[in-house]
Amino acid sequence: MATLLVCNTIAILLWTVISKRLRRWHISGAVAMVLCGTITGFFLRDEISEHLNTSLAEHIVELILAVLLFVDATEVRGGFLAGERSIVTRLLVFALPLSLILTGAVAIPLLGMPVFSTASIALVLVLACIVLPVDFAPSPEMMRDRLVPRRLRHGLAVESGYNDGIFSPIFAFALLLLGASNDGEVLAPIEALEHAVPAAGWAVLVGVGVGGFMGAAVRLALARDWVDAHGVRVAMLLMPFVTYECTVALNGNGFVATFLAGIAYKLLRTWSGGDDHDVPHAELALVDDLGAVASLFMWFIVGSVTALIFTMPASWPWILFALLALTVLRMVPVYIAFIGSRVSLRERTTLGFIGPRGTSSIVFGLLAFNALNDDDANAAIYVTVITVLGSIILHGWLGPRVLRALRPGGVGAAGAEPARETT
Image (cartoon, rainbow, N blue to C red; front, side, top):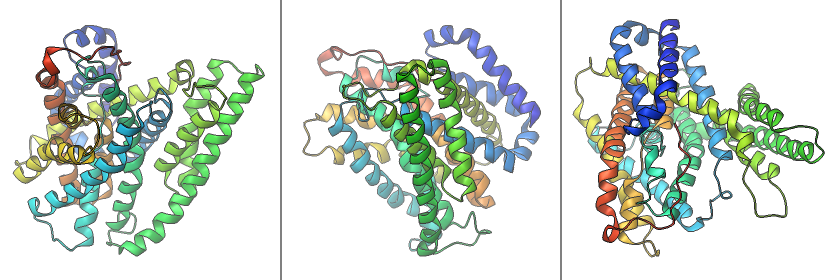
């Protein structure tokens, strides 16, 4: 484990000094880390397979997800919905549930699962939480591309920020159904709910409590000049860790708690009579940078796991499922969700196509690998790798060409503003 961590750190250090040059060549941090991780993985294959499925690795991944959820909840610009209520609502309230349903309808027959089986439904939910969350780390240029209308980019930014928080309780419930916390015994849905409801209650209590208290405290302290931006940055850095660990100690869902803490913090921190509902970037910078480094760390890990996947026989149903998740399982629900809206067919196609997968898929995949039995765990990690690598090719390399083809009349979106790059 130590050797892998050292190699990971060295790769990130090397990337930092050439990151600007790599961006000019359209090589994002995610792509660079995958390449470094894959090369390293071929030399450390035995160590990776030995240490990947350990409680230490699982806890590190859990803390990384907690940080990412907190950052996602606090850094959405332009208020909670970025001024695009209609687009965001249709993506999260209609398209996302439709994607879950369609994923189940495709996965069960394609992967040869029993139709009326609790275990099958639970495994499909786990896989859906791996392949469906949108994350722009593999292709950050999409969020700056003037070929994409500004309102669509804003709506997609909110979707990518909030969908992790929506998928987290679904993922936890699916693991409960599979008995991942009950010695491998598959639970009935009612039994799983008996575990999930108290966990959700503690998550709401701790998450809203910690986030709301700290948001109000920071706003009061700033108003009375008791603290500066440096102190607030430290507070925001520690908040997801404190929230997660306290919630888990109470047998609650730490992921939901950290996401709710971010929302509650943002609400109370920016509570005023004005129109500015954004947390200042000077206060977000430290935890945001930690999230960026954590994302680079996870991309290196998925690269190293890729070396293991290359030694396994090809499983064409799993490969096809991952490719469908990147295309059909995203685009069809988006088309349906925007029926009756003023969004044009071309814009619906753009929204459906722009759905890269990234850090969230990696984290959920690694957590599933640690929690599930051997066969299901191997399937989860296999699908994770194929999905994120496929997304790098589809959205990172082919994405700009597709967006140019979708450009109306050969004219880019006027008035578009570049979005801040994510790692």
